[in-house]
Amino acid sequence: MDFMVRDIDDGALAKIDMLARKRGISRNRYVVEALESLAILGELKAVEEKYSNLVNVMADIVEKNTEALRLQNEKIDQLMETMNYGEK
Image 1: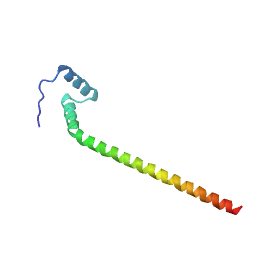
Image 2: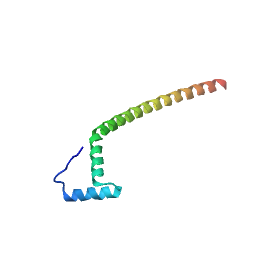
Image 3: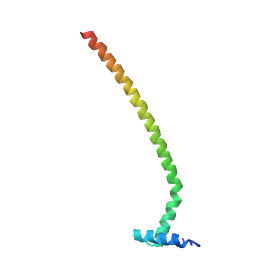
């Protein structure tokens, strides 16, 4: 499908040309890739937000589990002290 862009700033066009040259692709290919990336940007941000939320939930779970293990270790240590005290 064809798509025409009008009234683009000369400086912006020069920058696009330079970036395309650096990548070894045509101006058209560069602009097509940029537009395709822009089209999926919203979806990508939604996925990133879900991932960030998941990481936060997992960090909370790890923190709670760490505290539970610390408490269990304290109880085990107390029990071991009690058992060792009784053996003397």
